[in-house]
Amino acid sequence: MRAMSTPKRIGFFVYDGITALDLTGPAEAFACATLAPARGGAPRAAYEVVTLGLSRRPCVSESGITIVPATTLAAALPLDTLIVPGGNGLRRPEINRRAVAWIGEVAPRIRRVASVCTGIYGLAPTGLLDGRRVTTHWKFAADVATRFPKLDVAPNKLFVKSDRFYTAAGITAGIDLALALIEEDLGAAAALAVARELVVYVKRDGGQAQFSEPLRFQATARERFGELAAHITANLARDLSVDALADKMAVSARQFGRQCHVNFGCSPAVLVRRLRLDEARRRLHAGAGRIERIATSVGFRSADAFSRAFEREFGIKPSHYRARFLSSTRESR
Image (tube, rainbow, N blue to C red; front, side, top):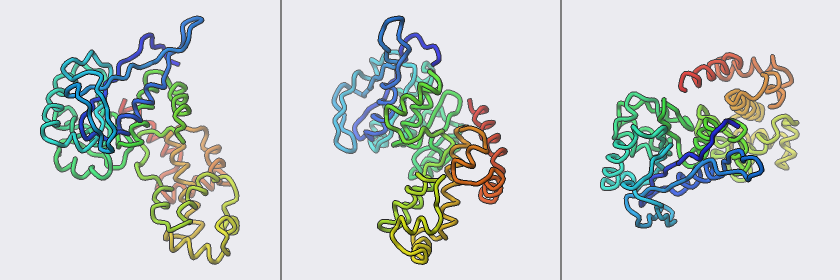
């Protein structure tokens, strides 16, 4: 754990029509992080989470949850990090106008400024993101790019860092962003401890796609075949032959092959290969060990077989892919 002697104050802007999970997900992540205890003492909170409203009047989220701001924008204490969650309320002119004016005024005095999901509609009008690479929820990426042409919108990233500005895809990606900020402050071990506390399935880096390969297959499948992609992804190093998967689905091998084409538009072998390579790509992003180990962990018999399959699928060797990603990550810091 990196040395951090006092808690850092994280401010969340709240308003009527906020998306509750864009607030509560990252807020809970910061609340779980702790500082090393003083000798003989108990662990201390690493962050002070503060909600900031246009007034102290309770706000009502899109889902009907009531949120009471701890303080107002005008009375806000100094912040280490400001996070602007998304929500349809931020696109209302009266809220947006006041939020943009306040953010533009205080941002120069804040170490980190971030948006989650459509929170970017509160940051972009300030001009602070002009010329920067950003992201948002995939449903709003085209609109953001049209409204704010000076932004370089990456429509399929979980989150993007540009100097001291961060933008996230939203919803669960807000948790991924919070974990990345915690890792910056306290180190990887502390961020992983928070991820375990939140029962996060996997700590994802910002370079990953918003719409994962397993989810894409699940979205196109019918009825019980919708869970097949999840089963394969959870058992990549096991027997995923046609016979084994047909037994899992309680159909004949021939029926299984036909159903794969109907539900996923490909053969069982292609389905398994794509899911194995998608997970391997994620592990390369995360720097998860040697390439030989990654190859066997996702079900390839050898590193050579894995390398050939990876290059056929993505047009680049795994070693070059990892080097390119790590290089771009260092350049963005």
